[in-house]
Structure formats: C-alpha cells, structure tokens
Figure 1 (cartoon, rainbow, N blue to C red):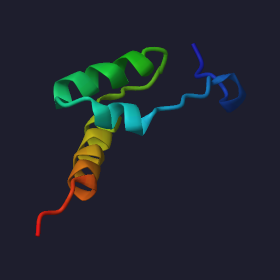
Figure 2 (figure 1 turned 120 degrees about the horizontal axis):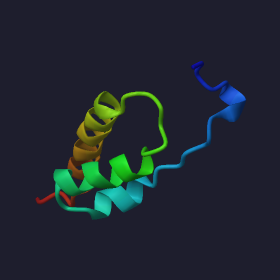
Figure 3 (figure 1 turned 60 degrees about the vertical axis):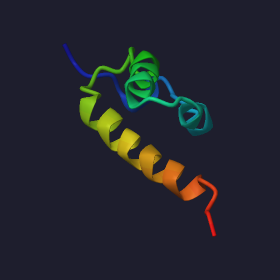
Figure 4 (figure 1 turned 180 degrees about the vertical axis):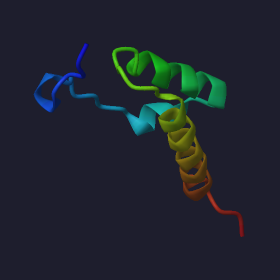
Length: 66
C-alpha cells in the first residue's frame, strides 16, 4: 500500500475562530479530530500543538484590565 500523492490528498480548512468559541480544550480536540478523520497520518501531535497555540491566542485576545 502506497501513500497518496499530494494531488490525491484532500484540502482541509480549520476554522480557528470556531475553535476559539469552544471553551474546553477537550471539546476543541474532538472538533479537530472530527475534521482530521480522513487524515492517513497520526494527528495527535498536530492537535496538541494547535491547541497550545489556540490557548495562547485566547490570552492575547482577552480584554486587558487597567
């Protein structure tokens, strides 16, 4: 069994704003796993790193108190 060529791989768009609207990391991870269900490579590392970056984005986008 050979790996699909780049032309055969489906394109995937992940809506970061949609993930930011989800309050719990567990729920975000589930949404990401659903999006990546057709991916033939392991996705755990990708999901973990993306969730780490999203947590950082939430902190940056939170209103700052004076």
